[in-house]
Image 1 (cartoon, rainbow, N blue to C red):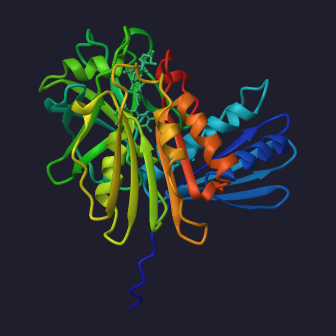
Image 2 (cartoon, protein in one colour):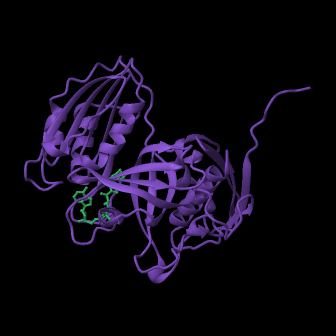
Image 3 (cartoon, rainbow, N blue to C red):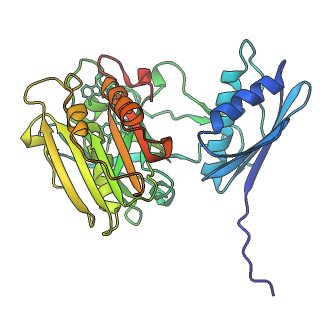
Length: 365
Ligand SMILES: Cc1cc2nc3c(=O)[nH]c(=O)nc-3n(C[C@H](O)[C@H](O)[C@H](O)COP(=O)(O)OP(=O)(O)OC[C@H]3O[C@@H](n4cnc5c(N)ncnc54)[C@H](O)[C@@H]3O)c2cc1C
């Protein structure tokens, strides 16, 4: 008997009528070439992601799209992403996208979990760790370390959550029931206990839904989590990891997972010495803490100055640089890495985690 196990893919299809299908397909390909493995001919394209694939075919008046996922979350991500970008690239048109196949309209989002606070305590004066419990967290342990957290309005007696829309994008509750969404990092996950830890920076500001929610979080509070996504680094022998407090959870997790053969230089900007944390890793670490000493977050050039002092290994070595910080700082770091150090895109990733004077919706990642 043939013992071969074939992974069964989940699939959904849609025909999208458009005025200029070929142009929309070109734009899709230009965008997705940086996000997956692209195989394209004039009228068709296939993009493979880690969690599934998208196939697109253009004829005279429509795009025929096929989404495949390695699981329900993977399929939902492909459908969501295709719909989001087709709608964005079909300028002046609002085409109807109606999927048939796996993943029904109106059903709960497969990547959503309702979570309940188990405990909340400060790990440093301005960093609060909230432990959350939720069902079926195995999928949150693979394929990325970030989550979108959904904070229901305080007045909501029964929190309302988004569901799967006809076009594959989430459909959000309307008006005052709509939860606020912010992106955070899963600092630690225990699938067996069904628990994740999130470390929240308790930053200044008048209206700060994420930070304020964490400050007030008490056992029993309900919130939502959608994920996981992003944050996986390629294999390398030498890493440079740089960031401010918001990236400290991601850097801690990356370090905890590095193998012993690796070396990592770590540059961390925090408010002062009381915000330093113990970082554990099997890799050989060179950790340098930098203190703002009273300067507000997002106003110093500590990270840029520190990165300029680093001796980067030659291009013969497997090296990778990762940074997460405020948007302006992030732009300076990108300039140094790309223009001065001439690193290829496969050798670095710099992500804006927040933007001084703007809410999270206005960050350009
Ligand atoms: C991939 C990713 C992972 C992230 N992981 C984490 C994490 O694990 N822990 C964490 O704490 N944050 C993390 N962040 C950053 C977090 O999402 C932002 O700081 C977010 O703006 C916080 O939302 P808020 O509702 O508190 O403030 P917002 O409503 O977004 O902003 C309100 C005001 O607060 C200011 N502000 C926002 N963040 C800061 C800050 N850190 N310091 C000073 N002022 C600030 C804004 O400039 C604005 O003026 C992550 C971001 C990304 C993109």
